[in-house]
Length: 312
Ligand code: TXA
Ligand code: MG
Image (cartoon, rainbow, N blue to C red; front, top):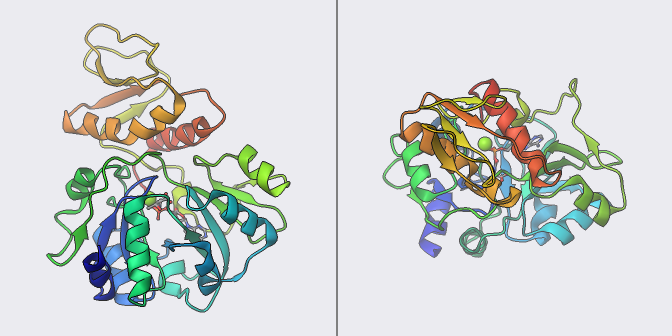
């Protein structure tokens, strides 16, 4: 693992597992290395990146202002699937923040990610900038094989892909804007508004349309496979089908996943959508979960997937 940290120091890219999805990491203080993230992903470079750190002790390196409720969120949920958007500090260059005056910071909950981040800090690293390790416009990868499938043609020989198995959560982190008086959800994830309210004692706001903060993950057309995603149809023979286990598969329909609860739905969703593409299916019908915890995050991603293809 320390050799992976050396690769980061050298300016190479290191794709690594987190509990949410795989990230494509680079030294967050190295403009050239970070520029390679954008070219490998084919992503516009005004879309900000999340800086991954080994512990909340490092927040002060990246952020200039951390409100009390953000500290409560970090204490309660890190390591874990929540990203805090804070007023940026000196380390956070325009090349990481997309030119904004804020920075997204997260401590991921995965043993391989934490090893990498700790080893990187030991050799002088400050943080690892990492978007999801997919090409812009595709579904996030939740296995190392999916990362290789996405990016092998674009990585160089000195870049690495670390294999930490399948991601446990399966959808991207909850993103909270912590620059206002109240926490504001920019992207729903496994940490729900109810969980946030419980630890902060505050109401949470939700993102509104006319906002200037750029969360490209909040573009409407997002997180899509090549197959067309249909959300309100009865599946026909030859179409792919993803639905809770208790919903039967009609004759001739290709069942791609049968999760037994919303957590499992999140965990297998992206690999099931990838499987649709692998099988060359042109359409996938998904019966959306109705839960109000991670179910909200699943429906958010499905609605974007059904609308179009552009994604971080
Ligand atoms: O679970 C995750 O968050 C994964 C893993 C690898 O940590 N990362 C991830 O990164 O999903 P990415 O870049 O694919 O999506 C992050 C989203 C983007 O839509 C970006 O625009 C938004 O977070 N974002 C990052 N920094 C921001 C900031 N300072 N202000 C507003 N939005 C920000
Ligand atoms: Mg992404």
